[in-house]
Amino acid sequence: MKTRSDRPTLYATQVWSWIESGILEIKALKDTPIFHLTSGHTVRQKWLHKTQRGNITSESGTTYLRKGIFLVPIWKVVPDWQIKYYHDNNLPLAKQGIVFRGKTYQRLCYMQVDDIDHVLRQTIHTIEGYLAVSPLLAENYPDLMEKLYRQNQIIAHIGNRQIGAEGLAITICIRLKSISRSVKSISANAPAFSANASKSDKDTVALVFRRYANELAGMTFRPIFRQIGYASRSLTLAADHIQNDRLPRAQRCIASALKNLSDSIES
Image 1 (cartoon, helix red, strand yellow):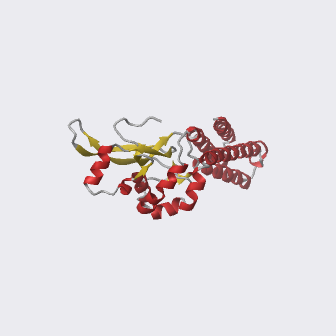
Image 2 (cartoon, rainbow, N blue to C red):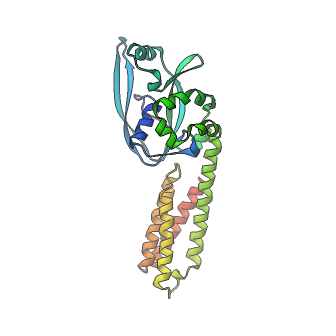
Image 3 (cartoon, rainbow, N blue to C red):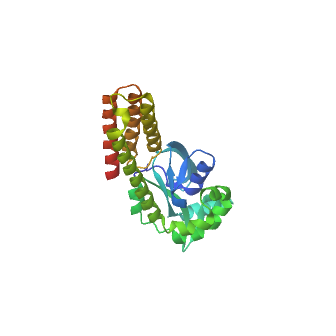
């Protein structure tokens, strides 16, 4: 996805501090250091800037990270002038998320990725990199790392990150198909849709639809979360209409929910 040209790639140390302080709400993808944002938030980035005259200044700016995106780890080469600046000012490189890898100093950063498909298409080779970053993680945020993904699992799972993303996509697709089949069956066969339905029959169907709506509302994965959100709202409205004896309106809402579920499954 496109990011602002006047902002550097997100630094891992800053991302971790935002998570640790509660600014970012994330889920770790299959115990890997790939993060999925469960809510959008504005963050303040800080970075060094070298002017044409050679002066080095500290810059900052706000960046909005959207709900549903993924943050995928990547190594970026650090220019020599930054390394010299940190050394001259007695700033430990590890605290800046920088390690010496091969022949260059590199900083662990996070790319913003729109959806699972793009995560799968990333060609970042990270397995050997996490061997180098282990002491960096331990020095900076051991408590955070222990909560999100135990360090003894990182190396094993990062090699399987594509499998993890594929598994997540498949799991979501299976669950959406299950919900869709259930909603179709209920709308076609449940006593709540008959002329002499009891209040108990209506309340039962409404409860099931509300549970499905809540479950769908929690699926924030791009690029399907908009359709899922529409389906969630349609099921909530259908439940309201059923409990208020507005069955034709309920059926229209159910049809809308099923269409959006179908679109999500095919995405």
